[in-house]
Length: 378
Image (cartoon, rainbow, N blue to C red; front, top):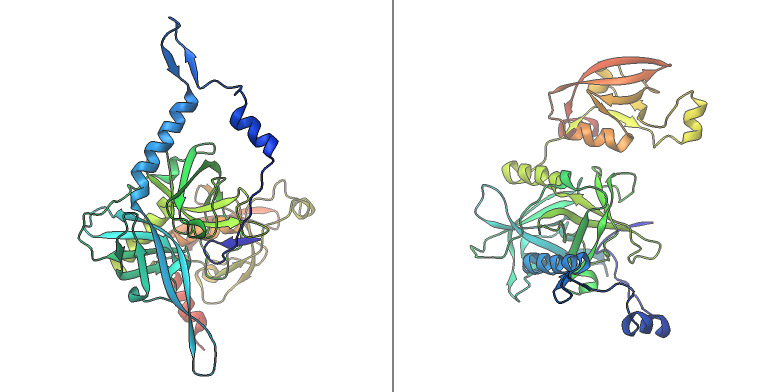
């Protein structure tokens, strides 16, 4: 079961075995922290201590820019005329966007969705309290940016490059799990390009970094940072049977957030491409073998809507899309993400398998907003 962070608040109890804990705290460590140098007098700091010092340096550098976000939202009616307000809380990180002077807070849309700027309170690490002048959000990626009127100076964290992150790289997660501000946890990048997870009807673009850094409800919107203290992700969701950390968490890559925020700041909305097709869920290996396929990669078309780019190009139900231009398609979410990031009006070549034959079909990508408007029209 997947939960978006900040939507629930569970109290987690902890218990330890006294004997086991006592052994590791009081017993002799099998791994010495220092080794003697050649002369026998000069201590050599081990890699373990160097990593610890790097964690401390990064936490000290980034933590002042991490904020606690509270948002008051309309809730269900408590009576016929009474409207109850509910409080949503999460995390965020102060940044200065390239080419812009104002400060802003990066966070998740689900933390602030449905709220006005005056209903949002941002708590800084130094005790200051601010409110945003504007809220810009993209529900389809769950990215939101809170533009601040404060002229500064404010602590701001630098943006990194999530494409450079590899499985096994160390990362730190900073946020306010269960309202515990300025909490720092560490882990590694466990996987990249995770998309086969369900996070509700509004989040359509999924291309997450997976990490085992401890993330819990309330961490939503906080930064995932590399060992240079640069933001590489926005912590968004956890996979958990009970709502608490189980070592599987998901962060929006900062490069995806960059593209979204650039458009939000420039025009207030995000332009996306579309084909006008419906894709089947991932193909099981057994089903792939029954169809005579040697792998379960690609995306299968199960519907083609009329008067859409896909219909105009001649796509058919049952087509297996295996590549877009020279990019091999992993699954249906990969195809959705790729087409969504393609500018409307651009022509791409879909490489498909139809009735056992490989074909190349050029398609001119349409505008998602226009397509949605057309489909909703009577």
